[in-house]
Length: 125
Image (cartoon, rainbow, N blue to C red; front, side, top):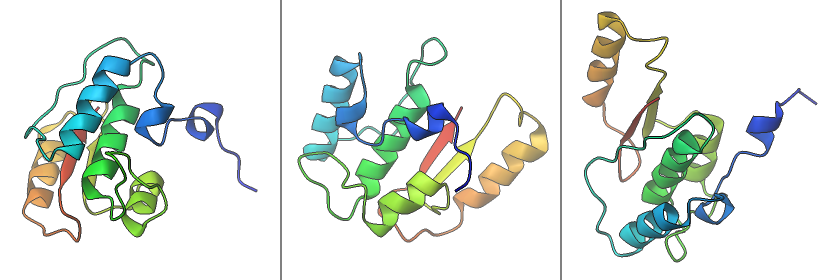
C-alpha cells in the first residue's frame, strides 16, 4: 500500500465533511441544488481552513452524475476522476510555485480544450 499523508487521507470529500464553515457550505450546496451557481468564486482565508478542499468539492458537485440534494456522490466516474486528480474538467494550478508567464499561457491554452463533463473548473491555489 502506498503511503498517503494524513491531510490527504482525511481531506473532506463531500460538503457534509467540511467542518467549521457551515454558512459557506450551505450557500454552495444551495447554489448547486437550485442551479444558481456563480461564474466565479473567491475563497479567502488562512492556510488550512479548507479553501482548496471546498473548491474541489464544488467542482465535484458541478460535474457529478448522481447529485443528491446538492452533494456529490463520490463514486461516479467524474467524482473519482476529480478525487484522483485525473479529471479533464478540473484544472488546478498552484499559483505560488507556477507564477510565470508560461504557466499562465499553458492554463489559457487548456481553456480551449473540450471536456467530457458539464462544467470546467479552474482552481488557482
